[in-house]
Length: 272
Image (cartoon, rainbow, N blue to C red; front, side, top):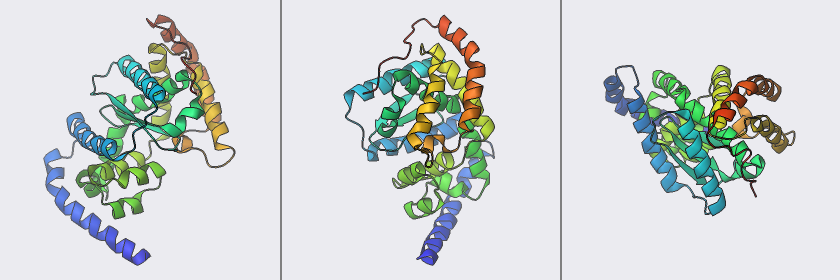
């Protein structure tokens, strides 16, 4: 079975790399925001079309208003969009260009609207700080270039994926598969994660949410793991103690931003 899967992956790679060669040349080795955002937009359309969208009206409204406020606070002129996906995974993400998703599995863990703002601030910061773009460029230069541009096959993508999010989205096929490998299995560096923590805390404060809730968030995330493997959202991030100490150190600056915000929502609504 493994030999058959390996052969399928080899065929997928060779075919994709051949179909990708002209695209790679057209990029000239450099990837612009417009190019990478266009790829992300196609993948996002597939995710929305093939995922089960949540019918929880209260959670959907909360995710929409929090994401809108965080996006505005970032000052970035992306084509922002968010969707709440019915899925037990404790996860959320933001593709380059501002295409966001929250999974229903994370909502009960968060407890408050303010904690959701902390999560979305972090994910939005990955996009505004172009962390995903850097990862995409690295994938382009590596052996995954064909899969990233042409779109991974379901068989090839499943073999390459390490995280559940990657496997879930790759199963959709097409452009979503390639982008899943680029953005959900090409880990951000610790420096990127720390950068997203700092900017995300500022974004939530500017959006009118108490930035102190960002510290409480990670206690809840740790509790959700119950001593087992951490939720995927936490798996590639710095250690909890390191992250909390960083957030605590940045808190005075974030609180100053919060005091300047036009509207103050505090912790917002509770998540039921």
